[in-house]
Image (tube, one colour):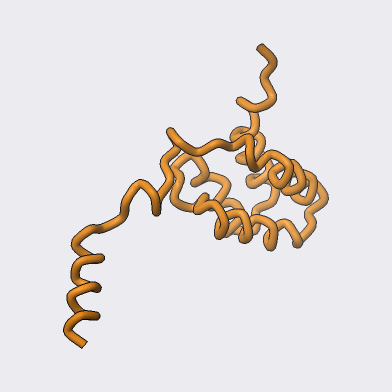
Length: 99
């Protein structure tokens, strides 16, 4: 019982680390492009399945902890597919530029 309390106290003291909360500096959007392109298509069709796909992406990649994704998170939480589409396009814009 004391060992568990000690472990919990140690975890609270340590706080979040770089391995548990990705930053925008290290996040590679390119690895998500297939899913994000599918999400964009679903949003353009007002397909409610977009919510499930987005929830899975958030869960798998902790997107809700990355500041640059805040507008998309807000729009998806508000079920505002038009705003979500615009926020997603803004996130994808750097990947669509040609050198």
